[in-house]
Amino acid sequence: MNSSAVQAQEAISPLDLPLQYRSIRTEINTAIEQVLESQHFTLGPQVEALENEIALFCGRRFGVGVGSGTDALTIALCASDIGPGDEVLLPPFTFIATADCVSALGAVPVFVDIDPATFCIDPDKLEAKVTPRTKAIVPVHLYGHPAEMDRLLALAARHNLRVIEDNAQAIGAKYKGKRTASLGDVGCLSFFPSKNLGGYGDGGMIVTDSSEFAARLRSLRAHGATKKYFSVEQGWNSRLDELQAAILRVKLRHLEEWNEGRRSRAALYDAALSGVDGIAIPRVVSGCEHVFHQYTVRVQKRDQVQKAMRDRGITTMVYYPVPIHLQPIYSGLGHQASDFSESELAAEQVLSLPIYPELSDEQGMRVANALIDAVNA
Image 1 (cartoon, rainbow, N blue to C red):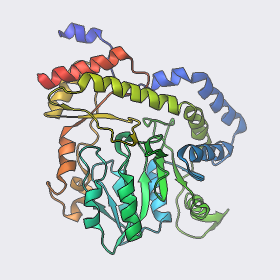
Image 2 (image 1 turned 90 degrees about the vertical axis):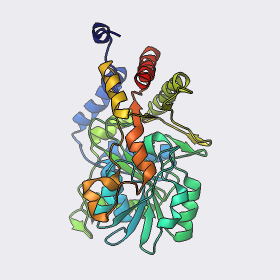
Image 3 (image 1 turned 60 degrees about the vertical axis):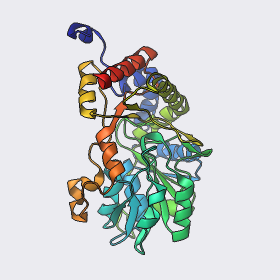
Image 4 (image 1 turned 135 degrees about the vertical axis):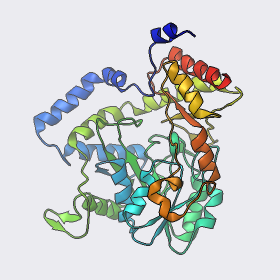
């Protein structure tokens, strides 16, 4: 394709939030105006309503809104009494927050390699990493695909470990008929704008079935206070805003439809890319419902392929180019390249294609054909 033809085609981005906003503009603006009229901006009726609605959606009894997905993980770990010297098992192929929430509390992230089929923590490799200091497991439902929870939960029960689900990328996904975030002891959500359920700024939530645990979470998000001006332990200032809660309540009403739209876009990609040499499409394990926060393929010469697609006006993303065990922040743990070979290989090969409910069939085929051409170049 010549350069003028490329320029004539509309660019395709990984996500089109302005298009999503235009589709629900009236609902969103009405919700924002209601908050402005109330002049109640933190931990008010919108937050309380969203907490109840998210808990119900996830199949939990309680939700506790916090300032971000990172705060959700940190506060959930703290409320689980994870602290200095404790070890927490988690995958090295995920966003840095999964690990640095552990180390921020003085605990030690202990990495467990991923299953190459799902990009989630490999249950076959968990047992060997358990020590007397191990206190918890943080499975990440990466890209919107559930981790293998049955075996993970069985191991946790044998060793009396807490299971804290990192569900930042998988709201609405199901594992054997149950929502992710409802399977472990506690689930953590992110409402970062790019998520399937994203706000217009940072936000997060923790969901649980324990009233006592929920009460401690509420205390920790407000400076460790059990009542106003009476703090009993070190806490955080991590309150979900009323404006964000109002926006998220509107968007939650559309989430099931949007997730189905993502699955439809994934099916289009599957049909176009299945069987193409040099492209490995995402696998959905039997019994799992993927919500395709990302549609992530594997390719050789990934950076070259990504550049070729960018030259054709298609922006793709790499989640994640450097596994956590090789990040400078964890150099003190002494890990070397090849310690977690599946995570390292994934970091070299993964490429996330544009995917969102509003992506048209024509745009989807442009992306697929551009990928095929790039791989065959």
